[in-house]
Length: 538
Image 1 (cartoon, helix red, strand yellow):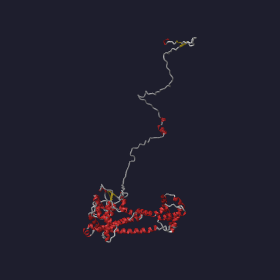
Image 2: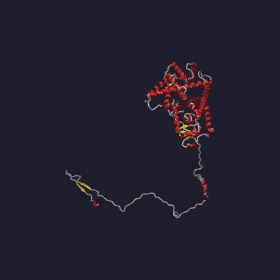
Image 3: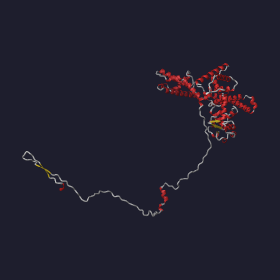
Image 4: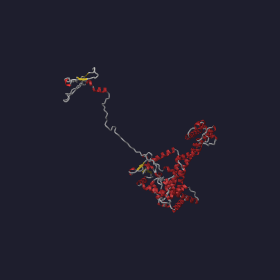
Protein backbone atom coordinates (compact mmCIF):
# COMPACT_ATOMS: atom_id res chain seq x y z
CA UNK A 1 0.00 0.00 0.00
CA UNK A 2 1.44 3.43 -0.91
CA UNK A 3 2.31 5.67 2.06
CA UNK A 4 -0.31 8.28 1.16
CA UNK A 5 -3.04 5.65 0.92
CA UNK A 6 -1.96 4.09 4.22
CA UNK A 7 -2.09 7.48 5.95
CA UNK A 8 -5.56 8.06 4.55
CA UNK A 9 -6.75 4.68 5.85
CA UNK A 10 -5.29 5.36 9.32
CA UNK A 11 -6.94 8.79 9.45
CA UNK A 12 -10.29 7.26 8.55
CA UNK A 13 -9.87 4.60 11.24
CA UNK A 14 -8.98 7.23 13.85
CA UNK A 15 -11.94 9.37 12.81
CA UNK A 16 -14.30 6.42 13.11
CA UNK A 17 -12.94 5.50 16.56
CA UNK A 18 -13.38 9.11 17.72
CA UNK A 19 -17.02 9.00 16.64
CA UNK A 20 -17.61 5.65 18.36
CA UNK A 21 -16.09 6.88 21.61
CA UNK A 22 -18.05 10.14 21.42
CA UNK A 23 -21.24 8.13 21.00
CA UNK A 24 -20.46 6.46 24.34
CA UNK A 25 -19.79 9.82 25.99
CA UNK A 26 -15.99 9.69 25.96
CA UNK A 27 -13.87 12.43 24.38
CA UNK A 28 -10.48 10.94 23.54
CA UNK A 29 -7.58 12.65 21.78
CA UNK A 30 -6.47 11.51 18.36
CA UNK A 31 -2.93 11.00 19.67
CA UNK A 32 -4.12 8.42 22.20
CA UNK A 33 -6.25 6.72 19.56
CA UNK A 34 -3.33 6.54 17.12
CA UNK A 35 -1.18 4.98 19.83
CA UNK A 36 -3.91 2.47 20.65
CA UNK A 37 -4.35 1.54 16.98
CA UNK A 38 -0.66 0.72 16.67
CA UNK A 39 -0.76 -1.21 19.95
CA UNK A 40 -3.71 -3.35 18.83
CA UNK A 41 -2.11 -4.07 15.45
CA UNK A 42 1.16 -4.97 17.17
CA UNK A 43 -0.45 -7.50 19.54
CA UNK A 44 -0.01 -10.94 17.91
CA UNK A 45 -3.09 -12.31 19.67
CA UNK A 46 -5.32 -10.03 17.57
CA UNK A 47 -4.18 -11.72 14.34
CA UNK A 48 -3.33 -8.67 12.22
CA UNK A 49 -0.80 -9.18 9.46
CA UNK A 50 1.18 -6.00 8.94
CA UNK A 51 2.54 -7.21 5.59
CA UNK A 52 -0.83 -7.22 3.79
CA UNK A 53 -3.46 -4.58 3.12
CA UNK A 54 -6.29 -4.28 5.62
CA UNK A 55 -9.66 -5.27 4.20
CA UNK A 56 -13.00 -3.95 5.40
CA UNK A 57 -13.47 -6.74 7.92
CA UNK A 58 -10.00 -6.06 9.35
CA UNK A 59 -10.81 -2.38 9.72
CA UNK A 60 -14.08 -3.13 11.53
CA UNK A 61 -12.31 -5.57 13.83
CA UNK A 62 -9.58 -3.04 14.53
CA UNK A 63 -12.09 -0.30 15.33
CA UNK A 64 -14.03 -2.60 17.64
CA UNK A 65 -10.94 -3.71 19.56
CA UNK A 66 -9.68 -0.15 19.96
CA UNK A 67 -13.05 1.15 21.16
CA UNK A 68 -13.34 -1.72 23.63
CA UNK A 69 -9.91 -1.02 25.12
CA UNK A 70 -10.43 2.73 25.18
CA UNK A 71 -13.77 2.46 27.01
CA UNK A 72 -12.52 -0.04 29.59
CA UNK A 73 -12.29 2.22 32.65
CA UNK A 74 -11.08 -0.60 34.92
CA UNK A 75 -8.05 -1.46 32.82
CA UNK A 76 -4.75 -0.31 34.41
CA UNK A 77 -3.03 -0.75 31.06
CA UNK A 78 -5.19 1.99 29.52
CA UNK A 79 -4.34 4.36 32.38
CA UNK A 80 -0.65 3.64 31.83
CA UNK A 81 -0.94 4.40 28.11
CA UNK A 82 -2.85 7.61 28.84
CA UNK A 83 -0.16 8.64 31.30
CA UNK A 84 2.59 7.94 28.77
CA UNK A 85 0.86 9.91 26.01
CA UNK A 86 0.11 12.83 28.32
CA UNK A 87 3.67 12.96 29.63
CA UNK A 88 5.10 12.73 26.13
CA UNK A 89 2.96 15.62 24.88
CA UNK A 90 3.40 17.91 27.88
CA UNK A 91 6.84 17.29 29.36
CA UNK A 92 9.66 19.28 27.80
CA UNK A 93 13.32 19.10 28.64
CA UNK A 94 15.06 22.24 29.81
CA UNK A 95 17.03 22.78 26.62
CA UNK A 96 13.95 22.27 24.45
CA UNK A 97 11.92 24.61 26.66
CA UNK A 98 14.54 27.35 26.40
CA UNK A 99 14.80 26.88 22.65
CA UNK A 100 11.03 27.15 22.26
CA UNK A 101 10.93 30.16 24.58
CA UNK A 102 13.55 32.00 22.53
CA UNK A 103 11.73 31.13 19.31
CA UNK A 104 8.41 32.49 20.61
CA UNK A 105 10.13 35.59 21.99
CA UNK A 106 11.84 36.31 18.66
CA UNK A 107 8.56 35.93 16.81
CA UNK A 108 6.80 38.35 19.18
CA UNK A 109 9.40 41.10 19.08
CA UNK A 110 10.30 40.54 15.44
CA UNK A 111 8.05 43.38 14.27
CA UNK A 112 9.56 45.82 16.78
CA UNK A 113 13.06 44.79 15.75
CA UNK A 114 12.26 45.33 12.07
CA UNK A 115 10.83 48.78 12.78
CA UNK A 116 14.10 49.74 14.46
CA UNK A 117 16.50 48.21 11.93
CA UNK A 118 14.58 49.53 8.90
CA UNK A 119 14.15 53.02 10.34
CA UNK A 120 15.66 55.96 8.41
CA UNK A 121 15.12 58.71 10.95
CA UNK A 122 16.46 62.16 10.10
CA UNK A 123 14.61 64.76 12.14
CA UNK A 124 14.80 65.25 15.88
CA UNK A 125 11.26 63.94 16.43
CA UNK A 126 11.98 60.80 14.40
CA UNK A 127 15.17 60.13 16.40
CA UNK A 128 13.29 60.50 19.69
CA UNK A 129 10.62 58.09 18.45
CA UNK A 130 13.32 55.60 17.42
CA UNK A 131 14.94 55.83 20.86
CA UNK A 132 11.60 55.09 22.55
CA UNK A 133 11.19 52.04 20.32
CA UNK A 134 14.61 50.79 21.41
CA UNK A 135 13.52 51.15 25.06
CA UNK A 136 10.35 49.18 24.32
CA UNK A 137 12.40 46.50 22.56
CA UNK A 138 14.70 46.18 25.59
CA UNK A 139 11.74 45.74 27.95
CA UNK A 140 9.97 43.24 25.70
CA UNK A 141 13.08 41.14 25.22
CA UNK A 142 13.94 41.02 28.92
CA UNK A 143 10.36 40.36 30.01
CA UNK A 144 10.98 42.35 33.20
CA UNK A 145 8.15 44.84 33.27
CA UNK A 146 5.52 46.24 30.95
CA UNK A 147 6.43 48.86 28.28
CA UNK A 148 3.20 50.71 29.18
CA UNK A 149 4.21 51.38 32.80
CA UNK A 150 5.71 54.88 32.94
CA UNK A 151 7.94 54.09 35.96
CA UNK A 152 9.43 51.03 34.31
CA UNK A 153 9.95 52.95 31.05
CA UNK A 154 11.76 55.77 32.88
CA UNK A 155 14.04 53.34 34.70
CA UNK A 156 14.84 51.44 31.50
CA UNK A 157 15.45 54.71 29.63
CA UNK A 158 17.90 55.89 32.29
CA UNK A 159 19.75 52.57 32.20
CA UNK A 160 19.89 52.63 28.40
CA UNK A 161 21.05 56.24 28.35
CA UNK A 162 24.02 55.34 30.59
CA UNK A 163 25.42 52.93 27.98
CA UNK A 164 23.80 54.18 24.76
CA UNK A 165 22.99 57.91 24.77
CA UNK A 166 20.62 59.32 22.20
CA UNK A 167 23.49 61.12 20.49
CA UNK A 168 24.81 57.72 19.32
CA UNK A 169 21.74 57.07 17.16
CA UNK A 170 23.49 58.56 14.14
CA UNK A 171 26.23 55.96 14.35
CA UNK A 172 23.65 53.24 15.00
CA UNK A 173 21.75 54.12 11.80
CA UNK A 174 24.89 53.71 9.68
CA UNK A 175 25.32 50.06 10.69
CA UNK A 176 24.13 47.12 8.62
CA UNK A 177 20.94 45.31 9.54
CA UNK A 178 22.75 42.33 11.11
CA UNK A 179 24.97 44.63 13.17
CA UNK A 180 21.90 46.55 14.34
CA UNK A 181 20.17 43.34 15.46
CA UNK A 182 23.30 42.18 17.28
CA UNK A 183 23.71 45.53 19.03
CA UNK A 184 20.04 45.55 20.06
CA UNK A 185 20.46 42.16 21.75
CA UNK A 186 23.61 43.34 23.52
CA UNK A 187 21.86 46.51 24.72
CA UNK A 188 18.93 44.44 26.01
CA UNK A 189 21.27 42.22 28.06
CA UNK A 190 23.27 45.18 29.41
CA UNK A 191 20.17 47.17 30.41
CA UNK A 192 18.64 44.09 32.03
CA UNK A 193 21.81 43.55 34.02
CA UNK A 194 21.83 47.19 35.17
CA UNK A 195 18.21 46.96 36.32
CA UNK A 196 18.85 43.71 38.19
CA UNK A 197 21.91 45.22 39.86
CA UNK A 198 19.93 48.32 40.89
CA UNK A 199 17.17 46.14 42.29
CA UNK A 200 19.69 44.14 44.32
CA UNK A 201 21.10 47.41 45.66
CA UNK A 202 17.62 48.67 46.53
CA UNK A 203 17.80 51.60 44.11
CA UNK A 204 15.41 50.41 41.42
CA UNK A 205 14.06 47.27 39.84
CA UNK A 206 10.51 48.45 39.33
CA UNK A 207 8.27 45.64 38.07
CA UNK A 208 10.86 42.88 38.65
CA UNK A 209 9.65 39.95 40.74
CA UNK A 210 11.80 38.50 43.49
CA UNK A 211 12.43 35.29 41.60
CA UNK A 212 15.00 33.79 44.04
CA UNK A 213 12.56 34.17 46.93
CA UNK A 214 9.74 32.67 44.88
CA UNK A 215 11.87 29.70 43.90
CA UNK A 216 13.12 29.33 47.47
CA UNK A 217 9.52 28.73 48.52
CA UNK A 218 8.23 26.89 45.45
CA UNK A 219 11.05 24.42 44.81
CA UNK A 220 11.09 22.82 48.29
CA UNK A 221 7.30 22.54 48.26
CA UNK A 222 7.34 20.95 44.81
CA UNK A 223 10.16 18.60 45.76
CA UNK A 224 8.39 17.58 48.94
CA UNK A 225 5.19 16.85 47.04
CA UNK A 226 7.06 14.78 44.44
CA UNK A 227 8.90 12.89 47.19
CA UNK A 228 5.64 12.00 48.89
CA UNK A 229 4.13 10.81 45.61
CA UNK A 230 7.29 8.85 44.87
CA UNK A 231 7.20 7.18 48.26
CA UNK A 232 3.56 6.21 47.75
CA UNK A 233 4.32 4.77 44.31
CA UNK A 234 7.28 2.78 45.63
CA UNK A 235 5.23 1.35 48.49
CA UNK A 236 2.53 0.25 46.05
CA UNK A 237 5.16 -1.29 43.78
CA UNK A 238 6.66 -3.21 46.70
CA UNK A 239 3.22 -4.48 47.74
CA UNK A 240 2.28 -5.57 44.22
CA UNK A 241 5.65 -7.27 43.77
CA UNK A 242 5.37 -9.11 47.09
CA UNK A 243 1.87 -10.35 46.23
CA UNK A 244 2.96 -11.57 42.80
CA UNK A 245 6.01 -13.34 44.24
CA UNK A 246 3.87 -15.03 46.88
CA UNK A 247 1.30 -16.04 44.27
CA UNK A 248 4.02 -17.56 42.12
CA UNK A 249 5.02 -19.83 45.01
CA UNK A 250 1.41 -20.67 46.02
CA UNK A 251 -0.67 -22.27 43.22
CA UNK A 252 -3.93 -21.94 45.18
CA UNK A 253 -3.44 -18.23 45.62
CA UNK A 254 -2.54 -17.73 41.97
CA UNK A 255 -5.76 -19.41 40.84
CA UNK A 256 -7.90 -17.01 42.87
CA UNK A 257 -5.88 -13.89 41.97
CA UNK A 258 -6.10 -12.04 38.68
CA UNK A 259 -2.40 -11.85 38.14
CA UNK A 260 -2.63 -10.07 34.80
CA UNK A 261 -4.55 -7.20 36.41
CA UNK A 262 -2.05 -6.98 39.23
CA UNK A 263 0.87 -6.98 36.79
CA UNK A 264 -0.73 -4.20 34.76
CA UNK A 265 -1.19 -2.25 37.98
CA UNK A 266 2.48 -2.87 38.77
CA UNK A 267 3.42 -1.53 35.32
CA UNK A 268 1.30 1.53 35.98
CA UNK A 269 2.97 2.24 39.31
CA UNK A 270 6.46 1.65 37.92
CA UNK A 271 5.79 3.99 35.00
CA UNK A 272 4.48 6.61 37.41
CA UNK A 273 7.64 6.18 39.49
CA UNK A 274 9.84 6.64 36.41
CA UNK A 275 8.07 9.87 35.44
CA UNK A 276 8.36 11.19 39.00
CA UNK A 277 12.11 10.50 38.93
CA UNK A 278 12.42 12.41 35.64
CA UNK A 279 10.60 15.42 37.10
CA UNK A 280 12.50 15.20 40.37
CA UNK A 281 15.88 15.33 38.64
CA UNK A 282 15.01 18.75 37.18
CA UNK A 283 13.97 20.16 40.56
CA UNK A 284 16.57 18.83 42.98
CA UNK A 285 19.87 20.60 43.43
CA UNK A 286 23.29 19.18 42.66
CA UNK A 287 24.21 18.75 46.32
CA UNK A 288 21.35 16.39 46.95
CA UNK A 289 22.10 14.44 43.79
CA UNK A 290 25.73 14.10 44.88
CA UNK A 291 24.65 12.84 48.30
CA UNK A 292 22.35 10.27 46.72
CA UNK A 293 25.13 9.06 44.47
CA UNK A 294 27.46 8.79 47.45
CA UNK A 295 24.93 6.69 49.37
CA UNK A 296 24.37 4.60 46.26
CA UNK A 297 28.09 3.86 45.93
CA UNK A 298 28.33 2.93 49.60
CA UNK A 299 25.38 0.64 49.09
CA UNK A 300 27.11 -0.99 46.15
CA UNK A 301 30.21 -1.81 48.11
CA UNK A 302 28.49 -3.26 51.18
CA UNK A 303 29.92 -6.57 52.30
CA UNK A 304 26.63 -8.44 52.04
CA UNK A 305 26.34 -7.72 48.32
CA UNK A 306 29.95 -8.48 47.49
CA UNK A 307 29.33 -12.08 48.42
CA UNK A 308 26.48 -12.38 45.87
CA UNK A 309 28.29 -11.04 42.85
CA UNK A 310 28.99 -12.99 39.67
CA UNK A 311 32.23 -14.93 39.38
CA UNK A 312 33.80 -14.04 36.06
CA UNK A 313 35.63 -17.35 35.94
CA UNK A 314 32.28 -19.09 35.37
CA UNK A 315 31.82 -17.28 32.04
CA UNK A 316 35.02 -17.01 30.07
CA UNK A 317 33.37 -15.76 26.87
CA UNK A 318 31.18 -13.06 28.43
CA UNK A 319 32.23 -9.69 29.77
CA UNK A 320 31.07 -8.60 33.22
CA UNK A 321 31.45 -5.08 34.59
CA UNK A 322 31.84 -4.19 38.26
CA UNK A 323 31.97 -0.86 40.13
CA UNK A 324 35.63 -1.11 41.07
CA UNK A 325 36.76 -2.07 37.55
CA UNK A 326 34.68 0.42 35.54
CA UNK A 327 35.29 4.16 35.78
CA UNK A 328 31.89 5.28 34.41
CA UNK A 329 29.91 2.49 36.03
CA UNK A 330 26.99 4.70 37.10
CA UNK A 331 26.66 6.26 33.62
CA UNK A 332 26.09 3.08 31.62
CA UNK A 333 22.77 2.84 29.78
CA UNK A 334 21.16 -0.24 31.31
CA UNK A 335 18.61 -2.15 29.25
CA UNK A 336 14.96 -2.37 30.37
CA UNK A 337 15.44 0.73 32.54
CA UNK A 338 17.40 -1.28 35.11
CA UNK A 339 14.84 -4.07 35.68
CA UNK A 340 15.92 -7.71 35.79
CA UNK A 341 15.47 -9.20 32.32
CA UNK A 342 15.53 -12.82 33.49
CA UNK A 343 12.87 -12.36 36.18
CA UNK A 344 10.61 -10.48 33.78
CA UNK A 345 10.89 -13.20 31.13
CA UNK A 346 10.78 -16.22 33.46
CA UNK A 347 7.80 -15.04 35.54
CA UNK A 348 5.77 -13.77 32.59
CA UNK A 349 6.10 -10.08 33.35
CA UNK A 350 7.17 -9.52 36.96
CA UNK A 351 9.23 -6.34 37.29
CA UNK A 352 12.06 -6.47 39.81
CA UNK A 353 14.82 -3.83 39.92
CA UNK A 354 18.26 -5.15 39.08
CA UNK A 355 21.24 -4.80 41.38
CA UNK A 356 24.29 -3.46 39.48
CA UNK A 357 26.64 -4.54 42.28
CA UNK A 358 26.04 -8.19 41.36
CA UNK A 359 27.58 -7.45 37.99
CA UNK A 360 26.49 -5.89 34.72
CA UNK A 361 26.50 -8.21 31.73
CA UNK A 362 27.75 -6.76 28.46
CA UNK A 363 26.09 -8.59 25.57
CA UNK A 364 26.17 -7.28 21.99
CA UNK A 365 27.19 -3.81 23.17
CA UNK A 366 24.20 -3.65 25.57
CA UNK A 367 24.16 -3.88 29.35
CA UNK A 368 21.86 -5.94 31.59
CA UNK A 369 21.38 -6.05 35.36
CA UNK A 370 19.85 -8.77 37.53
CA UNK A 371 18.32 -8.97 40.99
CA UNK A 372 20.14 -12.17 42.02
CA UNK A 373 23.25 -14.05 41.00
CA UNK A 374 21.20 -17.08 39.96
CA UNK A 375 19.16 -14.89 37.63
CA UNK A 376 22.36 -13.54 36.12
CA UNK A 377 23.71 -17.07 35.58
CA UNK A 378 20.48 -18.26 33.96
CA UNK A 379 20.30 -15.27 31.63
CA UNK A 380 23.96 -15.56 30.66
CA UNK A 381 23.53 -19.18 29.52
CA UNK A 382 21.28 -18.11 26.62
CA UNK A 383 20.51 -14.37 26.50
CA UNK A 384 18.67 -14.45 23.16
CA UNK A 385 15.84 -16.59 24.56
CA UNK A 386 15.03 -14.13 27.34
CA UNK A 387 15.43 -11.09 25.08
CA UNK A 388 12.87 -12.58 22.68
CA UNK A 389 10.51 -13.35 25.57
CA UNK A 390 10.69 -9.74 26.74
CA UNK A 391 9.95 -8.53 23.21
CA UNK A 392 6.93 -10.82 22.84
CA UNK A 393 5.59 -9.75 26.23
CA UNK A 394 5.91 -6.10 25.21
CA UNK A 395 3.79 -6.77 22.11
CA UNK A 396 0.95 -7.95 24.34
CA UNK A 397 1.33 -5.10 26.85
CA UNK A 398 2.24 -2.12 24.72
CA UNK A 399 2.77 0.14 27.73
CA UNK A 400 5.96 -1.84 28.40
CA UNK A 401 7.57 -0.44 25.25
CA UNK A 402 8.02 2.96 26.84
CA UNK A 403 8.42 1.67 30.39
CA UNK A 404 11.28 -0.66 29.43
CA UNK A 405 12.63 1.66 26.71
CA UNK A 406 12.16 -0.78 23.83
CA UNK A 407 11.73 1.95 21.23
CA UNK A 408 14.50 0.72 18.96
CA UNK A 409 12.77 -2.65 18.66
CA UNK A 410 9.41 -1.00 17.93
CA UNK A 411 10.29 2.11 15.94
CA UNK A 412 6.65 2.80 15.04
CA UNK A 413 5.89 3.58 18.69
CA UNK A 414 8.77 5.91 19.48
CA UNK A 415 7.58 8.94 21.52
CA UNK A 416 8.24 12.32 20.00
CA UNK A 417 10.32 13.41 22.97
CA UNK A 418 12.74 10.52 22.36
CA UNK A 419 12.96 10.67 18.57
CA UNK A 420 16.31 12.45 18.78
CA UNK A 421 17.73 9.76 21.04
CA UNK A 422 16.99 6.77 18.81
CA UNK A 423 20.39 6.86 17.14
CA UNK A 424 22.22 7.92 20.26
CA UNK A 425 25.40 5.95 20.83
CA UNK A 426 25.62 4.06 24.07
CA UNK A 427 28.21 5.12 26.58
CA UNK A 428 31.03 2.64 26.41
CA UNK A 429 32.47 1.41 29.71
CA UNK A 430 35.92 2.54 30.71
CA UNK A 431 37.31 -0.56 32.35
CA UNK A 432 40.19 -0.41 34.78
CA UNK A 433 42.27 -3.09 36.47
CA UNK A 434 45.24 -3.36 38.78
CA UNK A 435 48.55 -3.82 37.00
CA UNK A 436 52.19 -3.67 37.99
CA UNK A 437 55.52 -3.79 36.19
CA UNK A 438 59.13 -4.19 37.29
CA UNK A 439 62.38 -3.49 35.48
CA UNK A 440 66.00 -4.23 36.37
CA UNK A 441 68.19 -1.40 37.50
CA UNK A 442 70.46 -1.86 34.49
CA UNK A 443 69.20 -4.14 31.74
CA UNK A 444 72.42 -3.83 29.68
CA UNK A 445 75.96 -4.04 31.12
CA UNK A 446 77.39 -0.61 31.93
CA UNK A 447 79.62 1.01 29.30
CA UNK A 448 81.12 3.68 31.53
CA UNK A 449 84.96 3.87 31.28
CA UNK A 450 86.05 4.84 34.74
CA UNK A 451 89.64 5.53 33.66
CA UNK A 452 88.60 8.08 31.03
CA UNK A 453 90.11 11.55 31.47
CA UNK A 454 89.30 14.54 29.35
CA UNK A 455 92.13 16.72 30.73
CA UNK A 456 95.38 16.50 28.73
CA UNK A 457 97.54 17.47 31.70
CA UNK A 458 95.96 14.80 33.82
CA UNK A 459 96.92 12.30 31.15
CA UNK A 460 100.49 13.68 31.21
CA UNK A 461 100.60 13.36 34.98
CA UNK A 462 99.46 9.76 34.82
CA UNK A 463 101.98 8.98 32.07
CA UNK A 464 104.86 10.22 34.28
CA UNK A 465 107.17 10.67 31.28
CA UNK A 466 109.96 12.22 33.35
CA UNK A 467 110.77 8.86 34.86
CA UNK A 468 110.41 6.82 31.69
CA UNK A 469 113.01 5.67 29.10
CA UNK A 470 112.33 5.31 25.41
CA UNK A 471 112.96 1.87 23.96
CA UNK A 472 112.92 0.85 20.30
CA UNK A 473 112.68 -2.57 18.80
CA UNK A 474 113.22 -3.73 15.25
CA UNK A 475 112.23 -6.94 13.62
CA UNK A 476 113.84 -8.86 10.81
CA UNK A 477 111.50 -7.24 8.34
CA UNK A 478 111.90 -3.71 9.56
CA UNK A 479 115.58 -3.36 10.45
CA UNK A 480 116.53 -2.33 6.84
CA UNK A 481 113.97 0.39 6.67
CA UNK A 482 115.24 3.92 6.52
CA UNK A 483 114.02 7.30 5.61
CA UNK A 484 114.01 8.22 1.90
CA UNK A 485 114.42 11.64 0.39
CA UNK A 486 113.67 12.92 -3.13
CA UNK A 487 114.56 16.22 -4.76
CA UNK A 488 113.00 17.94 -7.74
CA UNK A 489 115.00 20.34 -9.92
CA UNK A 490 113.35 23.27 -11.57
CA UNK A 491 113.00 23.27 -15.39
CA UNK A 492 115.45 25.36 -17.53
CA UNK A 493 115.80 26.42 -21.17
CA UNK A 494 117.57 23.88 -23.44
CA UNK A 495 118.51 23.80 -27.13
CA UNK A 496 119.73 21.30 -29.76
CA UNK A 497 122.08 21.65 -32.79
CA UNK A 498 122.45 19.45 -35.86
CA UNK A 499 125.89 18.19 -37.12
CA UNK A 500 126.29 20.55 -40.19
CA UNK A 501 124.81 23.54 -41.68
CA UNK A 502 123.25 23.48 -45.10
CA UNK A 503 121.77 26.10 -47.34
CA UNK A 504 120.36 26.47 -50.81
CA UNK A 505 120.68 29.42 -53.27
CA UNK A 506 118.18 30.29 -55.96
CA UNK A 507 119.48 32.01 -59.13
CA UNK A 508 118.50 35.60 -59.20
CA UNK A 509 116.83 36.47 -62.46
CA UNK A 510 118.78 39.00 -64.54
CA UNK A 511 116.91 40.24 -67.57
CA UNK A 512 117.96 43.35 -69.55
CA UNK A 513 116.24 45.27 -72.30
CA UNK A 514 118.39 47.04 -74.99
CA UNK A 515 117.28 49.82 -77.24
CA UNK A 516 115.05 51.61 -74.78
CA UNK A 517 116.65 54.94 -75.50
CA UNK A 518 115.69 54.60 -79.14
CA UNK A 519 117.40 55.44 -82.42
CA UNK A 520 117.24 58.16 -84.95
CA UNK A 521 114.75 56.17 -86.88
CA UNK A 522 111.14 56.31 -85.92
CA UNK A 523 110.94 52.56 -85.53
CA UNK A 524 112.07 51.26 -82.12
CA UNK A 525 113.66 47.87 -81.68
CA UNK A 526 113.87 46.38 -78.22
CA UNK A 527 116.19 43.54 -77.39
CA UNK A 528 115.54 41.39 -74.32
CA UNK A 529 118.67 39.81 -72.86
CA UNK A 530 118.24 37.08 -70.15
CA UNK A 531 121.43 36.76 -68.11
CA UNK A 532 119.99 34.50 -65.38
CA UNK A 533 122.32 31.64 -64.56
CA UNK A 534 121.16 28.08 -64.56
CA UNK A 535 120.42 26.34 -61.30
CA UNK A 536 123.12 23.82 -61.60
CA UNK A 537 125.71 26.53 -62.14
CA UNK A 538 125.14 28.19 -58.87
